[in-house]
Structure formats: C-alpha cells, structure tokens
Length: 145
Image (cartoon, rainbow, N blue to C red; front, side, top):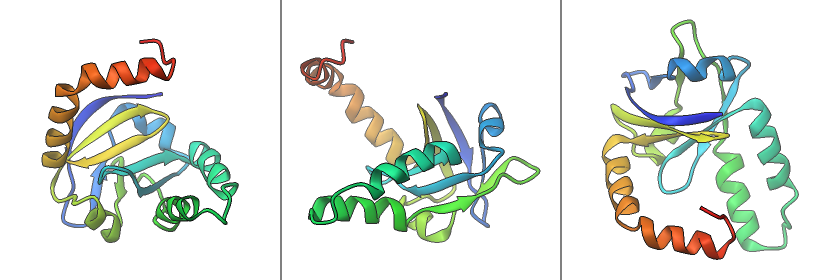
C-alpha cells in the first residue's frame, strides 16, 4: 500500500529517486503513465495489469472511453528501478506533467502520483480549502467518512 507525501528532485537525465519504502513493491518493474490533474501515475506491474484490463474492456464505440484509454495506455512506459533506487521519467511524460526539478511523490494506495512541486502545492491548497464540500459529496456516494 502506497501512502504518504515525499519531496524529491528529478535530475537532468529525468531520473527520480523513488522513496525507499516503496522500492521493494516496485522492484519487479513498474509502469508510469499520464495521470489526471497534470500529474503522472506510477503503478506496480500487478496494479497496472488490473487497470489495463479494465481499460481494454471499455466500449470502443463511446468517445470518452476511447479518449481515456488512449490517455492512459498510449502514454504508458515500462520503467525499472536502478541500483540507486531511481526510475527514468520519459521526456514526453515530464512535459505532460510539467515536471521540472522539484517534485512531490504522493502515495495513493495502489499507485504513486508524481507532481511538479508548485502544481501540487496549488492543487493541495485548493483541495484542502474545499475539503468539507468534497467530503459531503463523497457522503452522497456512500463512502462513509
């Protein structure tokens, strides 16, 4: 399970040091892809396979289903953790996520999200400000917070 928030740097070659506590889960390989809200998603191979299966089963006759599958699947790249615990974030994904040097790696249970630090701070501040109304809407969905 991925949880927590960690600040890291991306080097000039696009390498990101994965937080130590997550390296074991990602040791058998991982997949990085475009995420939502201008972040990147990093999945274990097992979690990626579950998502990819769901995406492949979406109805291709629906434009939104095709668009979402394209966003996630065409942007995906297999990555491996090197001996220093780093993964290479492809340039096209760094560009999509506006990832420069300083990033936040956020654990979200079955995936990691990689955010440009400034984008994350803006997103987090807005979400924290709206937390009561967000919780109320989740209550309507029977989340039971």
